[in-house]
Image (cartoon, rainbow, N blue to C red):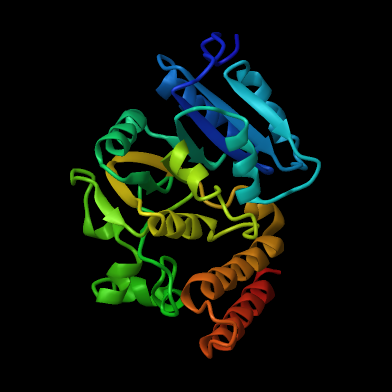
Length: 297
């Protein structure tokens, strides 16, 4: 028996899940099953875009047909472009962008959808994202700047000095609990976010110059520039097993992270071509990238 409910999607589903898959293995099956469990009584569909996975994990999507459709790319076109391909393949009013190594916790989607519908001007909402051990990952964030590399989510200084204003600005999750109401934030993680389709189309979807990483920060910033706002909803949760896909191409992921970080910085923080901070940022990111690559081998 297939793990879907057996019914085909309606002509215009109420909600569509958009998943870009690359070597996610059985994590993709867990992600899709969480959608089945959460949405079995709804008019929904999912579009899985497989970026030429070497492990053939894309075929897992076919187990969930007809609710789930698979689009195979001949090459890895990156996350942002993959999401845009999936978005163009559905007409759903709400779209759930979710990593293949992420799964919804029961009851998350109705909470997210309610927040998205009742908050005027809200384009996109994100849940509280947990690691498999239950710790909060820190995915509600302040706009990245020069200090993000020092006080960002994974930095030792932020963990050592979590109560500094700069630490709290970069990671807002620790300022709220699961019982708190939603709050307005600068951006939320693309590992799991629910958005109004109309808002995404208005800003042109993800910027496809970002191959991997930072495209979510860029999207949220452009949405805010278009007059929308972003909300973090701690009452809804998802579990994210970080790095399932990127671990198969570790060096490429490290390079993509730093290239995208500089692209974001040059686009939003120091947009002038001759801005004096640009070469400083580029040099610091290059040094960090070299160090991580050196220690990744």
